[in-house]
Length: 352
Ligand code: F0G
Image (cartoon, rainbow, N blue to C red):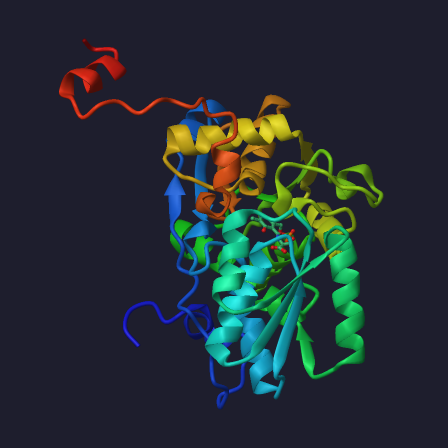
């Protein structure tokens, strides 16, 4: 290979892979940590975006999937199954294809963004819509894989997923030369906050960093079980990626928050959309709505005085904005086309 080899090879000494394993990779990882001057100005901090939408299938799930599918194929599994709000299914479908495995995905009927559905279909996954939400889909997937052990469950309850996803923390530290003071990220099924915290703790245990970040986990207000302290039976939010009422990694998320002296917050859809538009419109980074929850949470925590001025802050923006064009174009006024005429262009720009 040339250039970045993918995260398993890059962090091989920290990955649970055997020497003779065939590695399944699309060269995921090495995503940019981009300075966010507008957010920095607003908060009086040094804010960075960890742009996970630049992974091969457009979300952070690829970090977990390279490990989960590598693990599955080298253990003789023939098929992978997942429940998904969209991104996991897109990633599982791509990596399974790469490994020559069959992939099936269970998705909540009508509740996944169009781009994600297109990806799963194009990668040849068997897409099964379920009359239920993500939590129902995951329960179903667990039952199927418990009974049919030749099928591997590749949701974040699969420990290999967490091992892959922890590398995002390594990358951040490798760039900053230290851990951030605060790390904000959206929380749905709570695998990612678990993985980030594991990554930071590993580096800390090995003396690579001497401080740990406070973890700021942000949920959508209509799907905020960790904030409420109880599962939500009917989660609802425009940020469909995190429309989850009963996070599988509940205890690990609480541990990450408590051990890091962190916080869970809820952001309303209105605040999520505000942050979504701010990040695209002022920072030049197009993320999907769920990803903007991290930014909405940071802004609210800042307003509340939770964020010490001068802090180094990383917001993980988990998925690419192109995944969900419908939400991007929501409420856009319909504008008539103009004739092929420079005067008409000038008029449309209001400069005539
Ligand atoms: N952001 C995006 C864009 C996601 O797709 C997800 C989860 C999260 C944040 C939350 O991460 O579940 O580890 O707490 N999406 C899963 C899926 C559930 O099926 O694609 P988490």
